[in-house]
Length: 478
Image (cartoon, rainbow, N blue to C red; front, side, top):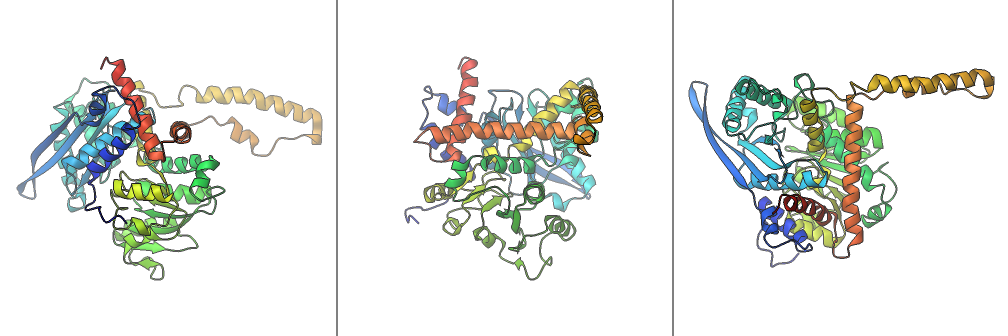
């Protein structure tokens, strides 16, 4: 490794470096590059909540990176490592992510410096409602201006609290449910949102394997069937990605890394069983003595076909990059590969499916939920039975032909049930997500293959995203 490298770039610096790498290959008008790169604004809030007999002060952030389209969109995370630089870097990634997958949002992000495991449910609700109040009164939560979503440490429960608090503050806003996405289905959410980011990782890998040139570049062949996969982080994203890749695509999950160690089994791990153990015990320790590895991060270096970092930023960095063996890495988390490690891996020939594309399933389905909330009708309600009626006409005609031809021609036993059933909301959401991931990958792939100066998918993704953001600003007269 180059001895001149003195330190690892921060997450914020990594995002800027990767942006600069792509912008250098583009012909942007003077000043526009800076306008796209810089974060528009960051609001810091410090508020007190009385808990356990005394006032606790919390620090939170909401950053707006780009308002080339509104509302701006981005999750709210609860973690002790939350800080302004991290939130601004994540907001920038949201801008580029939304542009890449063509959801009509600018980029934003929020965070609260808190360990949610230290508080009970009632305390977390009071904290969340107060945080919501501080943001909403400044329009940093608003259906047409700023729409949060779940992130690390938050989920459906917190989003429901946020939606309810906003509605209490805006009693005449008929679109109040659209102020946040990732809500439970019974509280204005949408089917398929919880699985969306992990499902998007699956769809991204499926699309990658539909393009033989890219597969060959990674030194792989065939399909996802039988591919050895290591997943770092079996939270919401990692769990759903691993589950779907195992159950629907026939991949083998040969390693699962958690905060207290890792599990390894070359024959393949039972994702459901491991997930159940983690939920009941808080980690993987004790699940299986034979396959347990105390030094969890070392399993990132395991020989495998696909590495799926699905938890934290910067887990693949200058300290371990030389030992990473996976020929294909898909970034299910935000920023799991630092800029320095990314450069080394790309020069080595490792193919990286970048975060701004790979984990865009969440914001894509959040877009569907936002549209559902604004239209005030669930997907499929108007057309499902009409589709079934039209299909019935074809089935009846086929059955008539079958009767006239006798044993020479018959319908497959389950054809009628499958064909007649109209698509429900979950099927429509998955269809829309699949289409989005295919279209976005094709846009990246075309740039990657068409230009000799674009050596990797990340640079291609940034070029596509920056170009679309630039077009939006130009349409505004900038």
